[in-house]
Length: 312
Image (cartoon, rainbow, N blue to C red; front, side, top):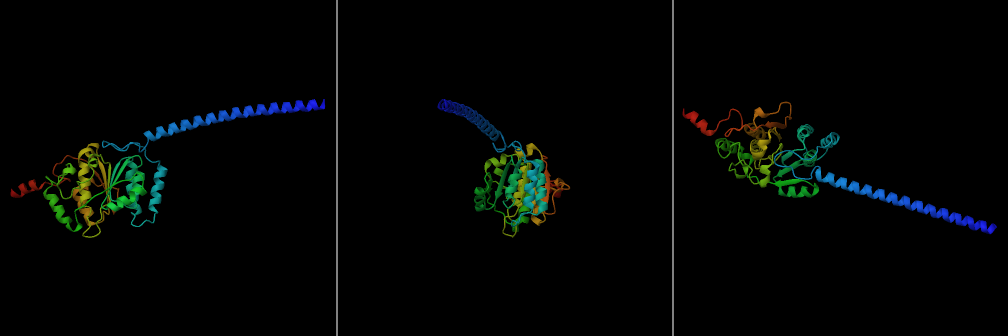
């Protein structure tokens, strides 16, 4: 009887063990099935979000960004760390914050930046969900930065102007304000010496919301100077798709220097200065298309009308 009892116990133990194995197998199967469903749902949701979220397509030339703006906390953190950076030749903190304030109000948007520099990744990040295009005088710098900043859209520009000639260039532009250097025109076909007409064709059809002039260089008489970028920004803001969508914020860095001040006054106009914005080294203009064919600013007149007045 003792031996029989042992066999019964062994049988009972084996049955219990088998039952536990079945339960464990069922549990494992259910867990695997639930995990699979979760994975499939998450993957599908992520793919859907990626396809319709920021950066899923290019920003159209008829409006601003199609994505979503950065959360305020992320935006502020990026600006904070940029202002405490020890990068060589970085902007002053006040200038960074003034530009960031404009981008906070407009982003996601179409942002055109003349000049690459330490702040390039910052402008790209702050305009999350929008289109940011950089133009620079140095082809090698464009090629250097592109692989280091995925998503960077930058083009090199061949400038033919010199800082030492800015007075002559300005007078020539004034003399042809009703012709080659008129405020409303297709820059792609412009013959004005201050116009930049060798950019990729599609850039002339983009409705730019913000234009930042921080290039090209202008530190010595043989540097290109910012005469072409300021003139081009002024024409873009008054022409084509950019004019059709409404006012354009134009920011001019290094505004404390003669070239930047004189050219901004001539083409961006004092009446367009934004009160309470900008800094001593950053000019902020809100340019509204007014349809004047031969004058950038109030009080200007074409050389032809001026000649008629003198003859009288």
